[in-house]
Image (cartoon, rainbow, N blue to C red; front, side, top):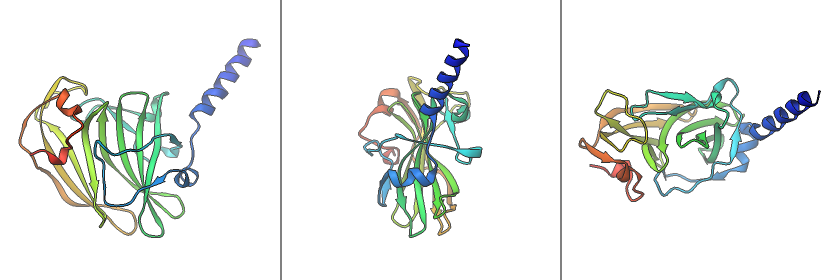
Length: 215
């Protein structure tokens, strides 16, 4: 009986620790940032408002390799989840939420999610991937709702784990626009915007440059 009671108590504690906010509750609690906005290595934000994600409507992939083909899902990890970091206001009836997918593990994925005035998710777009201080994918948003997504793309087809000492790669750019309903509309398909070269882990951890600065 004592063991059963202890199990119930631990289960309740675990549920309390991992309980999250819904969007209606969380959005007013976080900082509001203004556009234009760069997800640069110098951007300051906090990820301490854990979100519920019913029906997994917000993407929750946590990547394991540079190709972004191998991943786990936060829903299956006891020490990972989704955190609302900040929001932008788009007009009078639309929020753009910046969400971190991860946890105590080093890899993290960042998602932009548009939310309407009823606090319902309209659409999400994956815009960032980091591993410790290495940035694999970054984004910029202009003041006219254009989202520029930059990604480090390896030349090798063989899987390269995040944290590898070096990777031969180039940078691509994909451009989206956010319409008045909160939909992410592809404007410019992915294209190469840098030369191919070898990046060391030390270089990728360097906080003085961002992917859009590479030539």
